[in-house]
Length: 85
Image (cartoon, rainbow, N blue to C red; front, top):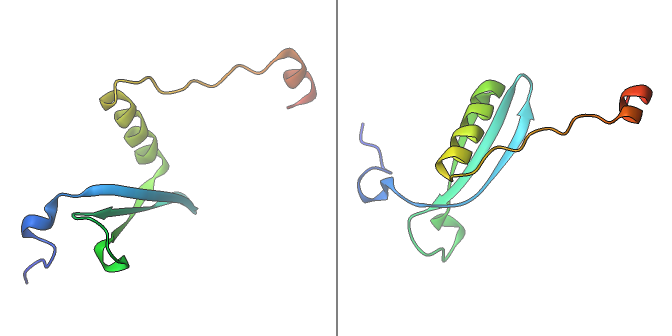
C-alpha cells in the first residue's frame, strides 16, 4: 500500500500545535503545510501520544537545538513554604 503523503510532501512548515492531558499521557496535535495555505485542505494534522517523560525530553531537546537553556523552577519563598503555597 502506497503512502499518499509520500514523495515531495515529506517536508513542511509547522503552523501550530496543541498539547492536552490524556490520562497518563499527553496528546499532541501538530499542524503543518508544504505550501502556501489557500484552504483548510492545505493544512495537515498529525496526532501523537507521548509519555510525560517523552514530552520533557522533547522540550529539553528543542531548547538545546535552539541554543537556549530550559527554564528552571524558582525556589519557594519562606512564606510559601510556611503557608503551603
